[in-house]
Image (cartoon, rainbow, N blue to C red):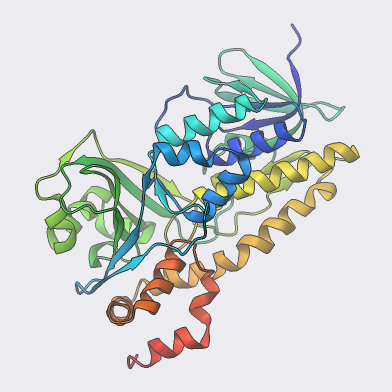
Length: 404
């Protein structure tokens, strides 16, 4: 029996894949959206959806549905190793502009997947890709572990940091920078939640941080992210987690009476290292499969959504022109580099600076007495301000004034 043929097969039903599938379907292209699990399914994540990601969701036509299922965030609290802290309001926005949200990925990804299907994508759940082959005519054949198969003229690999598809098309990631690993759990009975996200740059986690992101009521997504170097030194993420809870007053007080809802779960973050190419003949990488993760915070939802959108626009144009060669798709890499590369470069610099506890203390202490500086630091962390803002003379001048 012949496999169904699509213009594009998108492998991975997370934000990157759903953004690509929705954009392609709206452009009139036939698209298969392939997901190895069945919804609802969990994805280990901090669950924060920054305002720039919301703007992509607006363009996709799904923001209001996401917002209704999410917890709205009004401010950000940041603490330093010495215990200094500041609270900054969320990003300024006009009428109708999205703000910051927190929504569990089990809910977010299902909303995005169902939306893509409503827009015309063929949703294939429980389709675990085992093999990708390309015939002499250029068609891809994607085969599942259960015997199902589809064919497609082009591919979007959006199947995560350990992408099977990337490896199958010769674009296996080649990290050349530090990786981060994270541990996340959901807790009920968390004290003092008031509509703000919290980032604690506690000494045991540097260069990394501990987070508390409210998900509604007294519940929160709680976790820690550290570089592999910290993990090698400390032995386990669970040890780092326990150490932060024991030593950081801002965390200890929040979790003293909290109850975990299920086990802690870990996952790798590719940290926007130089992952090698993201384009092959007929195929593009998006989201975590391409290494699109903020080196400073580990946030990847914005980059996933936007890269999926760019990938779809690139493929729609290439299909219209009838040219899917790597050279014809090279504009994808130029576009994502023009939008992401500077943020990744500065993010790596800032991530390195977290190795210096005194510097972190100085920045947070200075921001605690300077509302504008606090807003800008929070804006850089939350994507509301470009990361190059930290390189501005005014910002650096304020830090130099502290005596560093």
